[in-house]
Amino acid sequence: MNSHDKLIDVLLRYIDLSKEEIAEILEIPPRPELGDYAFPCFTLAKSLRQAPQKIALELKDKIEADTDQTAFIERIEVAGAYLNFFIDRSFRAVDVIRRSIAAGDRPGASDKYKGKNIIVEYSSPNIAKPFHVGHAFTTFLGEAIANIYDYQGANVFRFNHLGDYGTQFGKLIVAWKLWGDEAALAENAIKELTRVYVKFHQEAEQKPELEDEAREAFRRLENREEEELELWQQFRDVSLEEFNQIYSRLKINFDNTNGESFYSHLIPEVVSLLQEKDLLIESEGALVVDLEEYGLKPCLVLKSDGSTIYASRDLAAMLYRAKEYDYDLNIYVVGLPQKNHFEQVFAVAKKAGFPKADNNVHVAFGTVKMADGSFSTRSGNVILLEDLLETSVEKTAAIIRSNNDDMPEAELRDSAEKIGLGAVRYAFLRNGRERDIIFSWEEMLDFEGDTAPYLMYTVARCNALARKAGTDILLELQTVSDTALKLLQEDEEQEVLKNIELFPHSLERATLTHEPSVMMRQIMTLARSFNKFYHNQPILRSYNHNLLLARLALTGAVERTLRAGLKLAGIEAVERM
Ligand code: ARG
Image (cartoon, rainbow, N blue to C red; front, side, top):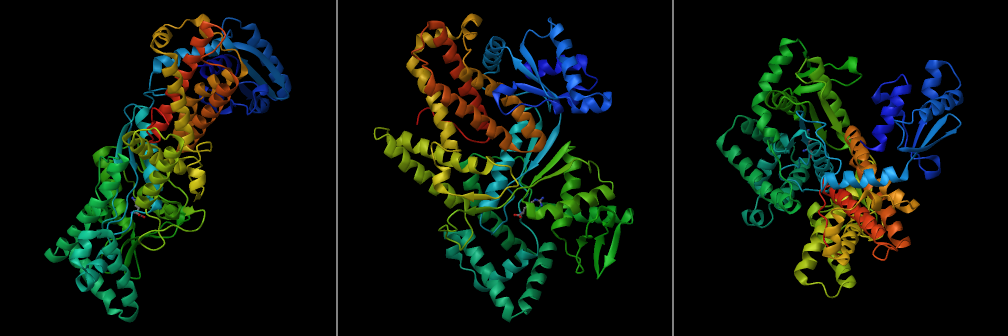
């Protein structure tokens, strides 16, 4: 058990609160002089009707008297209403390193979510439309969340809810028949489809009858008429080919890629379910569910011409997921602008008593901009993920080339690919997800900054230390003694140990809040503390052999923790940089 959990167990003996409540109250102070953990007594003051300082002092005495249980605590200080706990340095050194060795390359992994079926829906680009940076955000965020649940034992189902249906396909079919160019489609499908789609909107301003034709085309598609179905299928296939190239470059795989079209045939079931419960009311010819009691606008289910919409397909998908996957959580990683849409859909599910109606979560995120306001793309002002990735990899290759002129080309290419993609992923994950992202290349690729390259560089540095230590010492390291580990007493070493120890804790917080940034910040703090230690203390030239072993063991633990955190974010570390 780590010092955090051990401390909670001790507190549990003297405080009339549950484990979870104590965990919630227990803080990790921002500065080491305030201890490793701090317990504020305000909550207890209320229930015990006593001054919090008095409670703190009494608790200190009781805990200190309990010498059997508290050997891992070096001392306790009372500061106002707070109990500050200082963990014994030797305990921490041995405990953290031993547990790191035992966990191997899966620090913090657990079976906490064992038996839980968790759907994470992410990416979900739209057929015939560019894969832009907004979809990159859901793709990287969703992937990290799915990985984090998987790491903690859940049965994770990765869903890609392709936008492959809706009235816009009526427009596209009409536009294609009028202006489509087969050769251009073969050359660059999405560009060509975007071209005719944009043209449709321009032309429709003069010729509104085009809109009627589009509605008719979509109606025919819904009736599965051959011509429309074939064209739609073709648009879908060529678009998927492009998306799959991106996914394969990013090594992303989905368990389920049913698009919106797949759910179309399940909508009658949704409609009859809603009718049975008397929830569908007519409004200007359309059918809606009133959501006033939820403080929401009515949710449109069927349009006046009987055609289905985005929300109805989401309701059908939800029913399908509940039946087929019996989910404990159904997570939608979709941008903030769709907040209202999901509130409505979730509310309809509750009102209609859908199975698992309480297990739906919208994990929202902000928007993405370029710092210099510009980005050269092939299709107007959207930033394509493909361009973003390519530029990042190219710029990274140039940086590596200027740093190591002797790296073989193949290794350089491989590293540039991993670092370049890693830098992009990290930029999407480092901050709270609802914050907008302002991209700048200098910032994103700064090897000293708050970046993936910095983290990867630190991993490479750890590996270099191990290589330099040599195989004999590495062999000896496998049986490093507690006596040796207890030599890790310096502030800088203890800071590193503490940050390794906090990794699983950050993972837990990241899971509960669906904020991978919490974990990313923890590995960044760890990397910073390690580099501070590295610059201030000799490692390979430690003054005694046991200390050398202990410091290499610490380095190994840092390496494993950073690598695991990066991997959860979908970032593959490199051996050297
Ligand atoms: N395709 C949509 C878009 O690009 C996102 C789909 C979100 N998922 C959902 N179940 N509605 O905006």
